[in-house]
Amino acid sequence: MDQLALLFVILLAALVSVPVGDYFNLPAPVLMTVFGGVLAVLPFVPNVDIPPDLILPALLPPLLYAAVRRTSWRQFTANLRPILLLAVALVFVTTICVAAVAHAIVPGLPVAAAVALGALIAPPDPVAATAVAGQLGLPRRLVSILEGEGLFNDVTAIVLYHVAIAAAISGEFSPWEAGRDLVLSAVVAIVVGLALGWGANKLMSLLGDATLQIGLSLLVPYASYVLAEELHGSGVLAVLTTALFLSEYATDADDVMTRLAGHTFWDIIDTLVTGVAFGLIGLELHNAVRTASGRWGELLGWAAAVAAVVILVRLLWLLPATWLTKRLHARRDIDEEIPVGWRETVVMWWSGMRGVASVALALAVPLTTEDGRPFPDRDIIIFIAFGVIIATLVLQGLTLPSLVSRLGVRADCEREKDFEKELAVRATKAARRKLREIEQVEDLPEELSEQMLRRAFDIGIRISPDMGEEERREAHHKRARRLKRVRQIQSEMMSAARHEVLAARSEPGADPEIVDRVLRHLDVRSMR
Image (cartoon, rainbow, N blue to C red; front, side, top):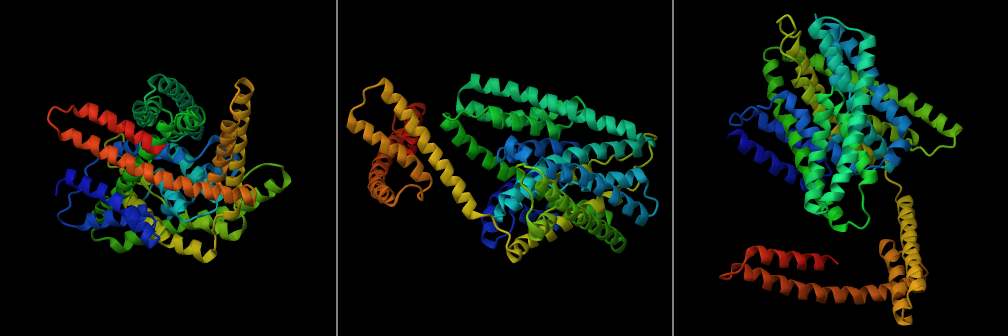
């Protein structure tokens, strides 16, 4: 098997892992990690030969962009305090604790190398958190905090990692320079992200065509990441800034085709790239196996100790942080989503899985220092990092569904239904207001006006059948049954039309481009 064939196998597995994970109530990313690990030990499967410095630029931009599409600037600001406590403060604390323990238990491990190890395994993975949490029906406030933490903790961790690597290579470290680099990296990233977001928004309005706009949306996160990195900024933060800007300002309510096609496109990208990313984690297991040759007991002990520190520090941090956030929330009249009770705190604790960024940073540890000597204990750092990644992904990922079930942490369905009903009412009122505006400038026939009024009510009741009085709901159900039959007949008619047009594609002298154009017109009509 060559590497191209291996890529197709992983892509196929990425698709298959979704229904398999749904059937067994297991996260698809965890299944892909296990699958990659199985492939890694098979003798006929080649070692993956991807330059470490290409892993983050190739995988993170589309994954981050897809994740941000599911959130909003308002949601981020509502969770700003818990996100900062987790994505910034906790990353610092975890890095320090891991560095201290690793320096103490691994003989001869320099402090700078220990800090690099702590930084690369400190951030929980945003893809793992969103993919796992999204499948378990958790309360929206927990999912929002986990998403926000996962999206922003890489910024802190990567800057710490680069500072530690530079200190290990050169033998010099300045806390003032480290702090300055962190601030400058953030400022550059935000400027680049806003500039590219504004430019992409203007360009999308010029392109017009849905296909071109979606293609541009795929290029923008890569451009944002690469440009920020070239200017010594944070590529991760630049992608997040660009994506948040576009989610707020590049949404046209009437651009239905672009929205539907874009949603489908990014779902596909998210599924495939996520599968490749976590399959790659499993495949890179061969590096750890090669490093541990003859030293399994010693290295596994170190990896287990560091994994225990990572998991324990998160719990010890979350308990007071959650309490503090609740106290501040109670004292101030603020709209902030926080964990409620110890059960949700435990779920947040157990959701701290490591993943793609940690793998890429571990593999990117340099081979040598400035004076040409080997980087201190590079193989040990990589083994410990992979041990922590596999332990958190497999142990926590596979047990999180049962933990959530046992603790009974579930989304508030009644609250979600109430909000859905509120949106349905607002949509109906907006449609009625527009109808009244039209009636003021046009003399609509009474029959047409009544018909449009019923359709305005139908807009809301189709979203939330519970709205409206009993008689109106019953009348809607009757119209819905009649409309369903009309649509069935129309569907059969459109199907016959599509079959006839498609059959013309193979007729002598038929122009396939014209046939496809007519077929696309029929497909659009079928969606109405």
